[in-house]
Image (cartoon, rainbow, N blue to C red; front, side, top):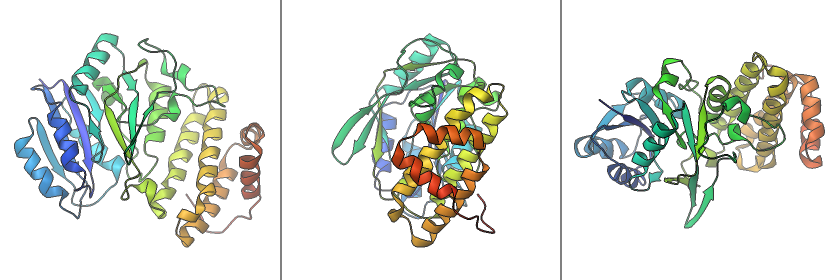
Length: 325
């Protein structure tokens, strides 16, 4: 029997993959499996993973013949997973020794649908602890109750899939898969769906995942058109939340978060290629017009002057023909 399945997508991370795999070995157990998904890498990553399949206990190697993005790679891993519990790791991050046994013990003791954890952010040589924005620790709660308030950072804003562990029943209920093909912000519709539809969750202060921030090959560092998938991701969040039984309570949070993300990208628009920057503006303006306008008005009124003014100017931007998310 497999107790835990760890899903690890890799894409052109030959520089970091050895450290990731070394940390998996330091977490190996006879009832753990490590599903290594190569998303059609063009560097030496496939060779590294083929070797790991032979040398890493519990390794299962899967290679995509076409690059599909992080969401699709994770879905491949979910479909292959046999464990009672599932978790994720990215191919350029790493773990503390014996972290997964502790994480598994936490969810077994709490007996809930999923558990969220803190993590360590690694930027160059700096290390900072990032906390789940939920004050109650080690207590089973209703995940719906952790979505609000709208004007504060909450559990749905801490969207990292690898910062937690998930019971297989979430797979069986169709709640753990990601929106296929999303290149960025793939965690956003996913974390909202979990909080709206799962029945129980908890947070713990366990530290063991080291998130490598600022990697040059990461999409968060590349200003190309794939970054604009955040619009499709948040369109999905708003559309699904609008159908929720508590839409009147939850939509303000979804719309306000969407606005904050649009403002963030506009505030650093110089990192985008010129054609992508123009597309970002036009697609974002169209996104604002698609939102429930009364909810949008309230969201803008609640934001600081700089962000609200930026978004109001964008909202007045004339519609461009042929622009779609």
